[in-house]
Figure 1: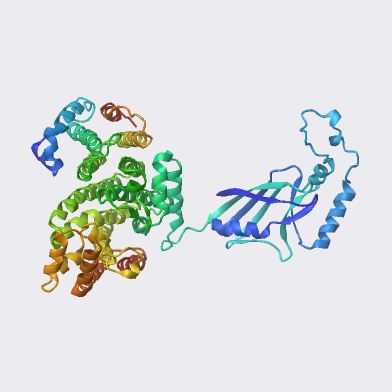
Figure 2: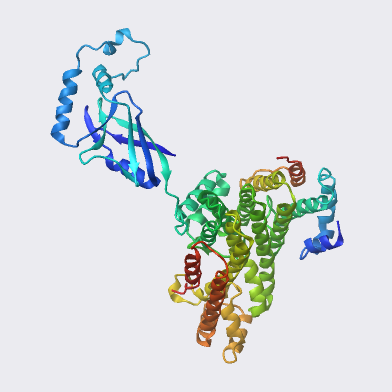
Length: 127
Length: 460
């Protein structure tokens, strides 16, 4: 991913790069091989941001303190915006449905599937 | 085409039920201007007729039916020993079936200029032949329907869409959101979507209502997380989701509707609309972080305040206006003008909202923003005031009990900060109105101007 793109998309979230975001990003890069090379880093970053956002918020576990929740919200929102601007509709919808199912499980106090496997599956969605 | 059912109860074995007014109501409700109303009896012992509503005449009809097909005249249908699969409560009603054969099970009525075409003495009847019972007729209306006028917002469509969306969601998620949505709110953002969606050539009220409802759900999702962050106990007069159900549930409900609203918008298939709303959501979240960070230097300064409220409040107003216009395929010039209008309106709206915190007649508890250390322009101006500023700043630095909040409120009110904020909000509204002057809005300008002016008039 270009340094400029990374700088722009990590604005206010720079500290997270060494705190799990880069590891998740690298892992998702492996799951976006079917997309145009230009899109691959964007989609991998979107998935990594959404995963980290959910973890930071404490969705399905103990609620994060307010300031951490806000950072998690920003991760989710930025990931969604990157998807909106770059991902095929089927992938956008699959990501949204993945978050809906994790939220439903959390609200029902039921176990949810692992976030990463759910999001990797979302990257495979086809219209 | 519009379709439905008309149901009614009868109380006598033979009865003429006048349905004329109910059919007229259906025609009016549907907006049918020119066309036909089709009625069909869903029963074998109910007929349909058009005739005069005169009781003695009805007795004549009844006598005639009795003469032609008398009750208990030895109908083969009533010989249960020769029939199969008869219900335990099968009625002895051969006469009623025979009488129904003399009437019709179908009826078509004409509609012209939105009115049922009937002669002076004509009424429309369902004729009960084997009552008393509950009965049902199928109704279809076809033809040319009036299009909603562009300046008339079918607000109920948004409420129906919100109800529909909340109905299909799992209860642990939907119930808290339903309580929040049903508690009210001004619905300004969906109104803006609906209005601006009527500007371009593709004016589709149903799609506009879907987008408007999704935007409202998104707004409410942000409020649910906000209330947890601000430790608010009440919103719209009811306990917040976090207060009522705990922060874990509040986070899950907020996340669910972030995702669902985003999906509903994406599924509308207009990438420009999806992008507008996604950008707004990102701006809201980034500004929330700034908002909380600025509370360390409470009450902050005007520049920081404007940066925060443009992201936190104005961005979704701007996105609502732009996305509605984009949905209707308005020109880029119109979309741009409406986006700027929404941004200015949202900023002014937030300033007016800040003033409500100091208004005893607003219906909201006075001084709540001060207590929660929420950014507020009147407070910023009062803190900068040469006379009251030092005391305001000193009070805000300490713990804020009832006495301190009361005193700060007095000082802000005495400082002249409120008229200054009002003047600033009014100036932004005038600027927003000017944005509308350079583009063709197909007659919607007065409505948008009125909405903008009323949005800041909230202190009483």
